[in-house]
Length: 185
Image (cartoon, rainbow, N blue to C red; front, side):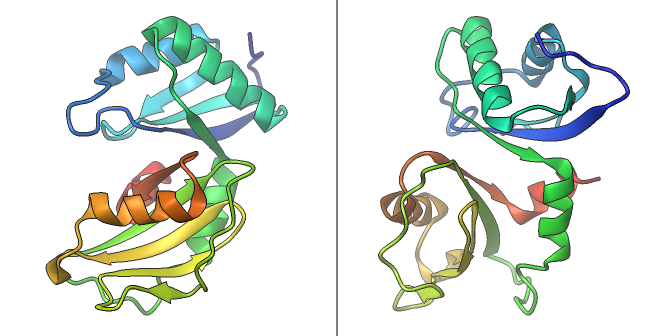
């Protein structure tokens, strides 16, 4: 069980595939309780898409992720992939202004896709855009992909996510940029 105390770091766990399209429904109160039962402090959830902010003693993030996945399996009797980020890293991500110069228009969605260790490298040349600019991948690092989806040009979010999974593998999870900003409030 993780130890908590004064030397805690703040993390955000992004859970993959819960509460999406009515599948893998988990109440946020139950998710919060599961994290508290695992021994984490200052637990709170943000939105219903599986975003959990918590405090944990600084540790190996791979070990921490494995511990959380194991605890979630015990609590909910299903495998739930977790992509873990230190909150300070997310602040740096915000400061990098990955969507600078992108006009926020109705129907335009800004996304961050979090990649797990070992994600495959895409064959696409980045920056990338589909022929009608309905999906643009602005930047890809070893840990994140920044994309823009223009819903009014005919490509839906599920289709855009399918392209990202094809290129980067399935061990990833995507969040709207507004969700990341809420996580950092």
